[in-house]
Length: 79
Image (cartoon, rainbow, N blue to C red):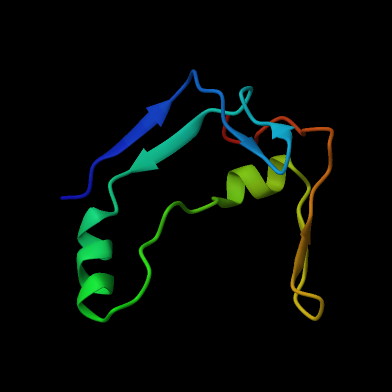
């Protein structure tokens, strides 16, 4: 069973944007990285969830390969 843990207090930032007001969810992805290592693929370091992307009003420009983020955080929907 995969264990999930909420992280209320942290000092995370993304592209210089302070995310400390957002409650984050963490999970151990070591089992995924074991499989990736067998395939000689680089490990996953982290995943940015939809809640963080929504709070940062993220816009993905696939053609340019960039992600634009707002400096002003929206309050998270699920809080």
